[in-house]
Image 1 (cartoon, rainbow, N blue to C red):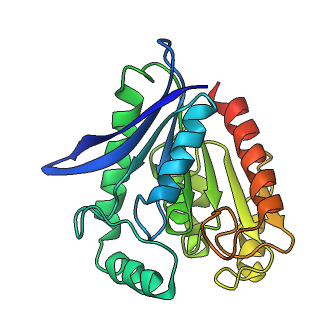
Image 2 (image 1 turned 30 degrees about the vertical axis):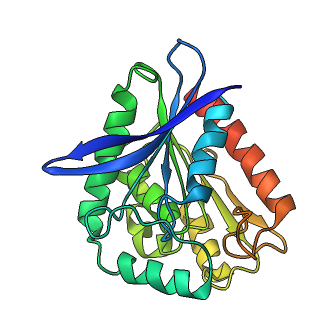
Length: 235
């Protein structure tokens, strides 16, 4: 499927920030997916995720969630990049970021390419945690969180999940211990629409083919599960 990608502007109160928009070819409205970044910004990897979603038939939007502190961050995955990303992440305010997530979600739902169709959220690492928080606050039709660090600190809000959420974690992730994953599984017990997947041999960032931790088999399986999940809940 052909796609068209470009930067667009979003307003969140008096704050304006850019987002990467990827749209499938065709005139009919399609479901939307908001793509939430890692601490490395809306870099080539995050843009490629949006483009892949558009290729699968979704209108995808990836907002710059660092824009209030340092707009246009695009980092790689070296130790220096990790340090820079953590530095910027430490300066952003969670409530402001969530306000921008909400604004981006509303913008996506209102776009003519998507208007009238359901909208979901996906995100990676920091964005994986934000995906969970968005699902507890903003009522997306579905959400898929990849190795969302910090979710356990917000499990008290699990009862606020209004829709289905899928979780992906790596078995050997040194940033998110399996004890945390077990807590998430316990919190999701009884929710058949909130599956928690753990991938053997996969570490943190296993979905990203630009990282040394890329785990091709796990990435392919998680992506297929995500597409099937969105296909079920966003169609």
